[in-house]
Image (cartoon, rainbow, N blue to C red):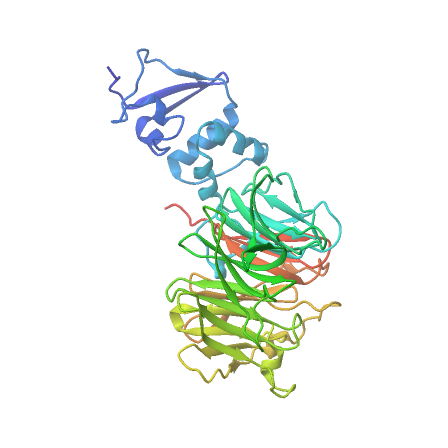
Amino acid sequence: MGIQKDRVRFNVGGRIFETSSTTLANAGRNSFFGAIFDENWTLQSDHSDEYFIDRNPDCFAVILDLLRTGELYIPANIPEKLLYREALFYGLLDHVRSAKWGQFDGNRLRLSESITGQAPGDGTAIRAGPDGGCCVAHGSMVHVYDWMLEEHAPITLDYQRVNDVGWIDSENIVISVCERLGRGDGGMGLFSSSTGELRDKFQVNHENQVKSFTAGALSFSSDYKIFSSCKGRSNEYGIGVWDQVTGKQIDFFYEPPGWSLGDADKLQWLHGSNCLLVATLFPRKDNCYISLLDFRDKKMVWSWSDSGAPITVDEKRVRDAIAMEENSYICVVNEFEDLGFMDLRSTAGSVRWSSRSRLMKGNNMPDEPCYPKLALHEGQLFSSMNDCISVFCGPEWVLTSRLRRTYGGSICDISSGSICDFSIGGDRLFALHSEENVFDIWETPPPPII
């Protein structure tokens, strides 16, 4: 028979705490506290005085305050990782994470911290995980960080170079790499994000034979398909498709003559139209090729290229592209951070440019070329250029804010290099700098509790 009372008393490491079952109910049924109540949140105990818990009392006070108020305040004398460990014991790690930063808003982002990788030299790509962690491709290695920004065992690939990384879920990542000649290995594998264990290897079949290949850009669909650009030594140039569950190849879109698919810089699955955006861009190729592929009919349903155009036209400078499915546009960007828009409902394929070049005045150009990147998240458009990320909003995509590392309220004069890549996920933005293997973490402050 449960004890019908609201007040609950805990002895945690010798310190006494009193709270209510109403407060503890905020912890949820799957927490430590949920286990001491029945389905009606009535205490399941034959002794009513107190519960003894042999854990850290300072951390318990922080966690109890979080359950009371919904706000997280960590005193200076408590290391964050110690609090995370205690929250894990109580089954409240998700509560701490959700209280640490708010729902993503590009116009309210604040720099949380910067992480320097252990390996020297440049990183090549960064990908945000679904739970607030990230992974960084660095040469032939991938460094994986959980949402607490603790680095897991690095994934070392016995290949020439990592080309792309993508998260299947918080526990699994796909890595595409260059083929190592003479080994006959495929260029893509599924790995555990926590242990680095190889769980599956994806192969390309051509004319009923397994072929070695270089895997490039990656994308994923909601119906558990993996897409990758592929280059082989026979005729395996195009876009391969694999089943996430079985790991088997289920389709291949071969590169048509005069076009480029196997060298693609970016793939993006469009959920509404069930098509795949494929973009091959300068400087990987002398010309730019952007297309939409429909795998159901094996058709290229929309395409644009600057091939054959005069070298002086703006289209020649396209550095990145992203599909804006709700607006039926493809957005492109050049090296001056000019945004261009192409209407997917038109086959003319002309670019309507919106000049942003004046925004670059007063900014120092990087010593090394660093090409801009684009991202679209929750109706906000992001574009990186040099050491800044610009945020555009509204139907006319007006510049509303810029993200740049500052110290003491002023722009930092000590540069860590231009931003070579950035990624948004888990309500965080991660920006990778081109020098010293440094990445920044941007978060939206949680809203005040009134």
